[in-house]
Length: 166
Image (cartoon, rainbow, N blue to C red; front, side, top):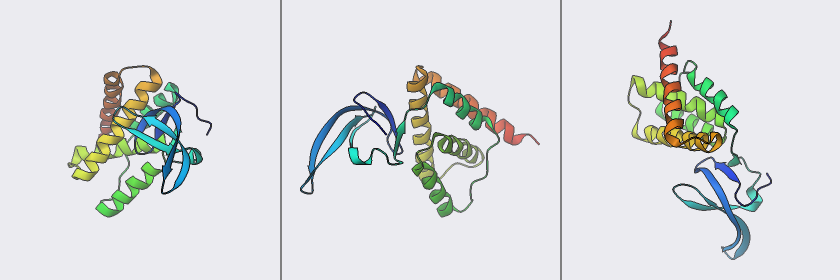
């Protein structure tokens, strides 16, 4: 991926960030080039040599978010009732750094939480996924985070209604 200063990117773990500068850092005796990336909550350094990894991707378009909200409105899919299998599945999906995989996780975790409160670790992941989705949606569509959050919540409510239809 060809990255430049002020580009907006999405990291699988940290969400939306802006590349602030290219810098050199010496770690374990080796000097390497890094992108300094700033998010709303933190700053991190990402190795330039890893810019083609599946951990980062460009921010998606507003039209893509319309499609993602459609995915979220659909009938939720069942996730394993086995906690360990479920956490592995969730982490594997997050590691894809895919907006559509995250949209499906948000939808399906929301339905699980609707029926029975999520485990504290799952709830933390769920909240983080929603926050990252809202952050990217807001940045992409040029809307404030409250409006993006409201659109997400409307889609999640529609999903629950779709699940209850026979």
